[in-house]
Each structure stands twice: as C-alpha cells, then as structure tokens.
Image 1 (cartoon, helix red, strand yellow):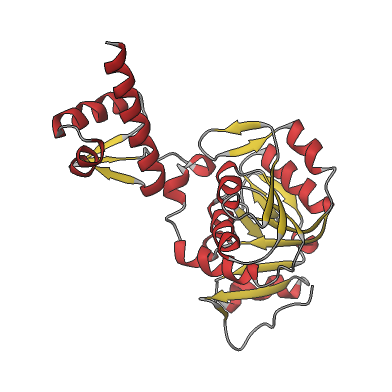
Image 2 (cartoon, helix red, strand yellow):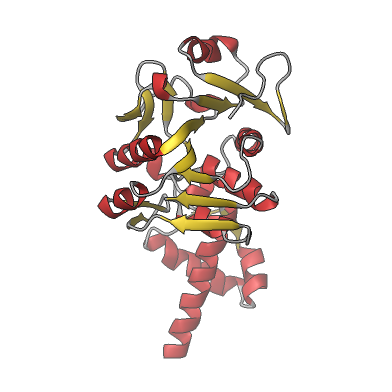
Length: 273
C-alpha cells in the first residue's frame, strides 16, 4: 500500500508541476506521460479537485482561478504575454555589465528573467521571486540572491522582515519593480502591505528605479501605495496610447514604449544610465 501511495503522490506532484508550466492538462497526455491508464488519471484529478488543487475540465483539468494578486501564477503569466516579452527585451537593453539589480516578483519580472538568462551579461540579481531566482540560476554568469523570508504559495514571492533586512544591506544600480497598478495620483500600488514595503526598500537602495508595466495596469490602482509616481525614474510599457502615457512624461518620468525587439518609432530615445 505504501508503494501505491507513493506512486499516487508522485503522479499528483507531476500533474501539479505540469499545470504550473502550462496552465491546463489533458487526461490523454498525462496518461501517456506517466505510463498509466486514462481511468487512473481521471481518479487522480478527481482526488486533486476535492483538495482544491485543480479544476476539472472536459478532457482534463486547469488551475483554479483565484482573485487579485493571488491569481495562480501560471495563469497570470499567460495574460499580456507578448507585451511582457517586449517590455523585458527593452529592459535588458538598459543593463550594463556587472551591474547589481533588484527584481520583485511577478510574471513580467519572470519574462525579464528569461531574457537575462538568454543574454551574455554578467550580473548580480537580488529577487524576492522564487521562480525568478530559479530561472536566473540557469545562467552561470548571473549571481543570484533570493531574499529569504516567508514564501507566499500562490505568488511564489518571499515576504517579511527578513526580506527587508537583507534588501536594506544591498546597494543596487537598478531596481526593476512591477506592481498591480501604476497611476499618476496613487503612484505604484500593490495588493499587500508587505509587497509595498519591499518595493519601497528596493527603491531606497537603488540608484535608479524602473517600473515595468503592461498597458492593462497603467492608470490602475490597488490598495497600497509604495512609491509616488514622481519618484520613478523610468517607465517601460508596451502601451501606445499617448493619452495614457503623456501624463507620466509630464510628471518628469522618462518613458520607453517597447514594441517587439525594438523601441516604438517616433517617440522616445533610450534614456542614458
């Protein structure tokens, strides 16, 4: 019975991992991958659904959807994925050899991590994202520090006093910060007080603060303000709506509009570091 339980546990872990990577799974593909019957996979998914780990669909399962900042990370990663990739590529163009970077958590930051891994830049990166640190570790030229603290299960972020203490001892060249919203009046905003405190600490310890924000999050606000808009040095976004972007420029924030691998034509030059 113990062997059977371990086998079932292994299958459930594998299914969960596949869901985190793809967002959805099919019964047929899981049966083939795990070398078991379709009926066994269906039983596994039924058990996992009862525990709240998955949501059954026709022919498979998906991650249950949660609200706000607790939305399952794999699902958030699929939202505005092209825009996040464009923003990440533009951000990499601003980074110089041997710089020290801060990166908080989030799917836009994960897109930046993938671009950094693919680059040939030697860097030191300090992050609160567990999956971001794991991704960055794939490139041996990148020295990665994971700020240690309480791990939030659904967002894969570390939080708490230990995180802030570690961040306050590090002097960064650039703080790349993403949030739930960025607006003129409320500035950079977050769902949780702990996230706002982390962003403030990164901002205070960095020479330059750069906000990574998709168009969807511009002019939006959440519960907690971390940094006033006037203190942000640069905004990178894929938003091409001049009415949305102009107020940030008028406030004195430099703006890069990211489009593919290049900056959008006719607007903004790459700001000097």
